[in-house]
Length: 179
Image 1 (cartoon, helix red, strand yellow):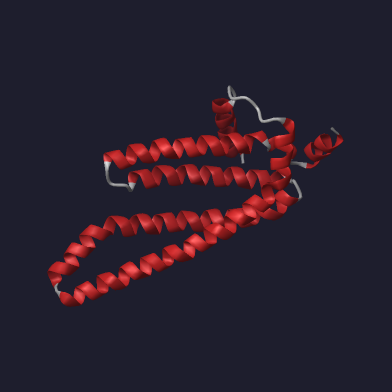
Image 2 (cartoon, one colour; image 1 turned 120 degrees about the vertical axis):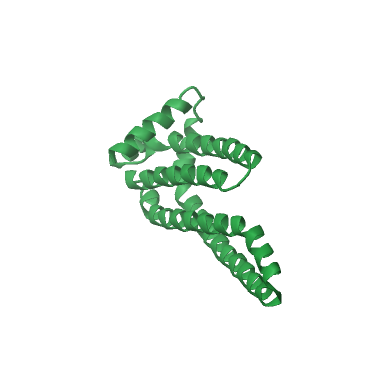
């Protein structure tokens, strides 16, 4: 928990110079983030199923090439091994994110601090995923673009996440409802 608080302060420091959302925008986002998280969990779950289908299709394709001859099998295995490793790693991260998102829906709906904390943990997992996927791109250009566009996505997500933090928790909810 202490590590998460330190990381939160670091991210908040990076985003401090940016202007704040209007209070009405912050309030709307805080009150509605639960169903946005629910939709995200559902769509990510669908993408997990599609990824499993793609991995299974690749595995059956590789197996059929193995029956044709050793050379074809070796060519397919060497060409696709990077893709299959990357796909499995992405699949693992997606499962972690969808589980955490599903756990966050009810606390977010109740506007509890635990819901916001779960969103921040999801944010941190996504940051690790960006770096791992950039490394698994197996190319310098892929790595550079993965890091750049991943950092842009993380900056946008972190901005919105930190804009709604004050709305979560028992005293925060009462404070903002009174306004």
